Length: 223
Ligand SMILES: C[S@@+](CC[C@H](N)C(=O)[O-])C[C@H]1O[C@@H](n2cnc3c(N)ncnc32)[C@H](O)[C@@H]1O
Image 1 (tube, rainbow, N blue to C red):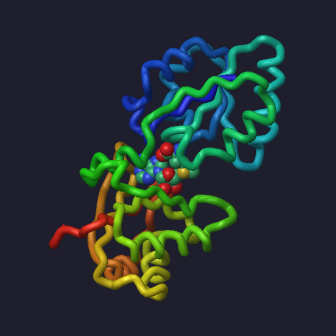
Image 2 (image 1 turned 30 degrees about the vertical axis):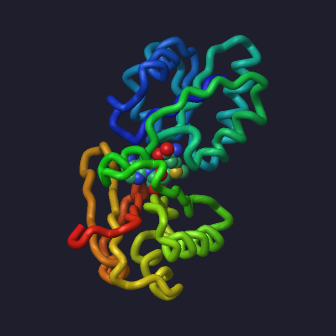
């Protein structure tokens, strides 16, 4: 079984190695939005979209096919080492040999847009079923400490930017602390917004599930 990370959304961000793996696959599985990114490279492979509800069945089917000598690729959004361990664990439970082909993560895109270095940044995800609260506490801790930029993945749709900003202010973070929100990086409709936590808390727009927040370690005036 091969896992191909497809990048942050723009099909041109798929790696050449990922494309080769897809071109030689007999079966390609993944969530529908992920498969949409790579559909042009799947050739004659059987393409099986999955949803949160039937992912176990689809991966079980893929494992059976692999046992029959079929070449199978599981696609994963962004990079496979970034907030994707639930899917990877499901693959590892079923396949003895797994090849991982990394991709460009949305957090790398956020770094590129924000002009920040990963080694001067800290990545926190709220994007997990459990542990949202402890991740928020961690976020508060590192914001207070102020030594690194923080790249934060909100959690669609119960821990989104306005709610996170309110929680941070309630937790004692200065309400004039600057934050940038990037939505739909590399995709049609990509946009960004920068303002204070207080302004963020008051936003009423609906945010895309593809949203990332960036807190600069030493906010530049007016940025
Ligand atoms: C389960 S995580 C998977 C991250 C993925 N493995 C990666 O490396 O980008 C999904 C979250 O990543 C962020 N994300 C992924 N793609 C994005 C994009 N194109 N623009 C903004 N945020 C994105 C959003 O916070 C989204 O809810």
